[in-house]
Length: 350
Ligand code: CP
Image 1 (cartoon, rainbow, N blue to C red):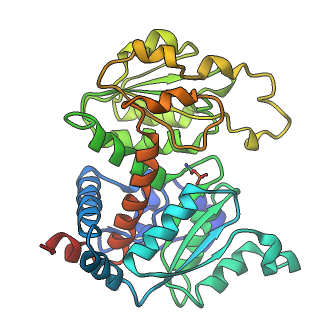
Image 2: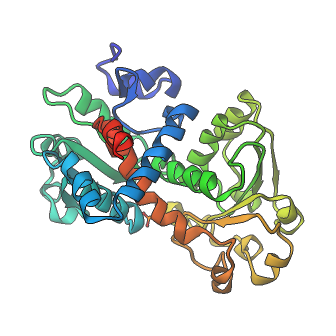
């Protein structure tokens, strides 16, 4: 681990690339905070571990083996922003590997209501558990927790389950796992169309970062003009020579797509109702669009959805979003196995 500034604001202001070593140990991810922490070799290894765990867990003997691996560890799920699938998939990933899990989902029921700072709250968790998995509405707070924990007397790894509008790296992990497993010949060379509120969508931001690991990928961003992908992501793509284009018209690009990644409007991030007047109906996938898209194209969504995918689309074999959310449990279990260094035991099991 590198020497770091003891001043949080100074540390936070640094480029992500310069901070990554602080969140690693012996060349491995210790705190999972950013998509930029994953390289291709690690992604492929995670997916191999996830695939292997799925197979092992099909028998009671196999499931018992998996749940013995980390039965001496405890995890804290601190999710103080709403979540269904990230919370449940992490909780069940912990169960698969035998970790005992505690949770706080509402600061009204913790001592934060008595005036305890969030920083002191997370420090308290480290007295009891061996892993903190968290979702927090404040950008940078998950990173701050990892910064605090890494400098504490009893360091505890931290996983980012969604942080403000900025990153959702384990969603990106499961998204690429889904792309890899559902697209013929994998992600290389594919055209991925991301649709919706790209400005405030932390899933599309994190997924865009991961594209640096794949060759010949093209991205098409389809959004209302007010909700375009942010400049920092576009600059990242340019620096990594990943071609992209932006449009506010979905229909003309549908037939180019190998994968369509739909997202809902993220109006929980409105500060003054700024998305109230956005016509989101143009950023929806309907049954009639199924006749236009490639036979091999997959349709993804991080979920939850509102109206941006018609319910009838669910019946089409190309709609993989329910598989995608199940993949999340296995991808997250693979990540936890990596952090606690038990993935070799999983891969070696006959
Ligand atoms: N995709 C996702 O983060 O879903 P939840 O908000 O339900 O966790």
